[in-house]
Image 1: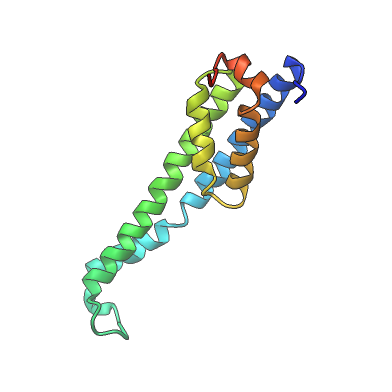
Image 2: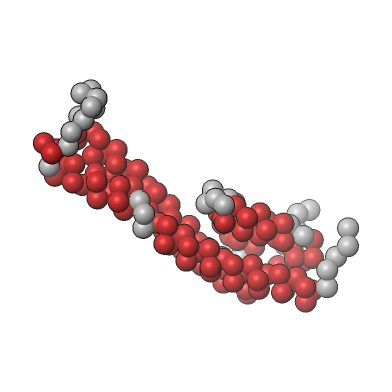
Length: 140
């Protein structure tokens, strides 16, 4: 396996850091979409008589709680991922906190398709021996 000159590793990390910021912005934008579920859940909880259900077994209160829980969970996931991507971008740029960036790259894999591509690219770069040496991290 050929090793890259340190300048190419630094450039790849710089580009990855910039891409982390871009994807973090997109994650933040998409994290706002689940707030529609939160709003629906709150409306159903506040006015259960207005909720019409085809399935009589599911009470309006339960449906409202389900919408609220799913919406909040997706919103919080998006916010945490976006913040982690921003922090990881700074870490990549400064060549600090290798394992934090590694874990964030793994977490980004779930945000398809852009997070998956970014996560894979980050993992490929971080696993290179020359990059690990740049960080001062060894596996042995």
